[in-house]
Image 1 (spheres, rainbow, N blue to C red):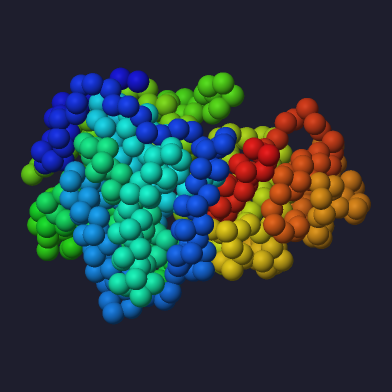
Image 2 (cartoon, rainbow, N blue to C red):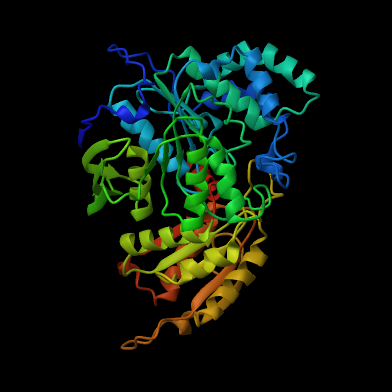
Length: 505
């Protein structure tokens, strides 16, 4: 990868401290192994706290109103810990989609430039340690470091829990711990991903004096009730991370009214705006390749913006293991569930498996746009098999959409697009259902596709469902095993976590 930064990252406004030339000793390690056993007491302690990821966020909790989360509670906790978030500059990232990818891209870019970077994001896939990385290697924080940190902060946290009458949340405490670790590790910059919205998120305690830049990746219809009920109210909540006089980078593309809401906030705070959709921003995917069987896209990204905040960045032969044009856009923003997610996924499926058979396994939270997601995905590379399932969310099932309800929604979406489908019923274990579908395979010499197969897997999700999907694919395409194929598991980060956990076992 060739990278040139002619302005020496001038858009950070001089807030970045010079990085030490010596290699700092890492404090992180890869997830898994026996490390998790070291966190037993810490995880039990955290599980006693209120966890809105598990139970669902109250209506209006993310809005800047009387119904919103109390940021004063977070500030008081941080004060007991010595206000660690004021000890380094931060880039604060909000957005309905793409903020996690943007945080990852930006962290890696900064590490390549030699900075000691702290990154905080959520949710996690396999271990809570993934939410925090620090140092120049970027792996999850080690169990030993997290355990020692919690031991150090426990007295202050206990005092805060008591003084706040037990109202401190899981997310607030873990966010405070990440800020404390970044301070103790003397990071040059912290990349901080907001959890919900922006204005009343626990991460939104970063003051303008420590804010290097705010980033808003996208605005979409997610957590509608918690964020005010409309796209406009969601945009208002996310623009709450913009601070007086500090630059804001916007991803998009946004509709005119949504972008205007963000720009109006920036105007009020006298914050320069850099848009990833500016005419001076160009990105192109040169090729799709594989590295040790892992697909990647090789991209060129060029940013040349003039005006009151000139910026010039050139990145060539950037290998993104996150595929799709939407990820290229996230990478542009860093240099600078929903319908949109389904469109992006559909494009990736067409790229990775343009001709072979495709099975889709879907599990989603109850607060997502199920019909829009299904309709958009079906309008692209039509899957041969769709299996609906359920997965736990943050250790509970209260927020999971029943598989039977998802099946009805997907069936309706298919019929609405004139797609013939066959309900194959419930699937137990790893066996394809005992129904005769062999006659449904397309006849030789005909262009008419076989009907799409729709079924429900046993809850909760297990790897047996992937084995059943593989068998169904072979039967659905007439036993053509030589044609290969793709099984795509989607719907939420929690589904991905379930897949990785099952495969690890």
